[in-house]
Length: 152
Image 1: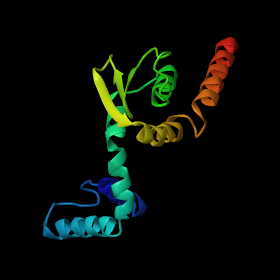
Image 2 (image 1 turned 120 degrees about the vertical axis):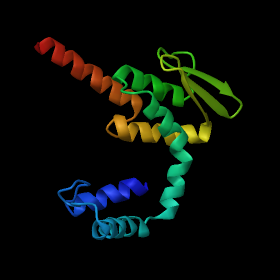
Image 3 (image 1 turned 90 degrees about the vertical axis):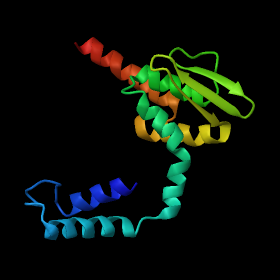
């Protein structure tokens, strides 16, 4: 989150971390960069930071998988919904109030509560599914893919 705030500040000020904007590396440039960093992170909303920490486990898991295609994303959404029987790419095991989701192709797994799974599904929908629910998004993407294939 701190790095995102710094990046936003640099983008807003149209600065890059290059010799173009910080030439020479002297004390003056060190102070200039330090001031930018402090100002970028000074007003962070710590409540939002804490909420992001709660979700880091799933986000780290998701990022560790590399680039997923639409079928894998849909399969992951199914796993988050606890649909353990119909999965193709992921494996999902219920253990009490938790779900253990495994992606065997990368030997990666995560264990989350069913309450966290609801939040993580929403994150997945917002990040990859254009805010649509999994079924609508998957149907739309399949139709789009079919139309593109027929056009070629």
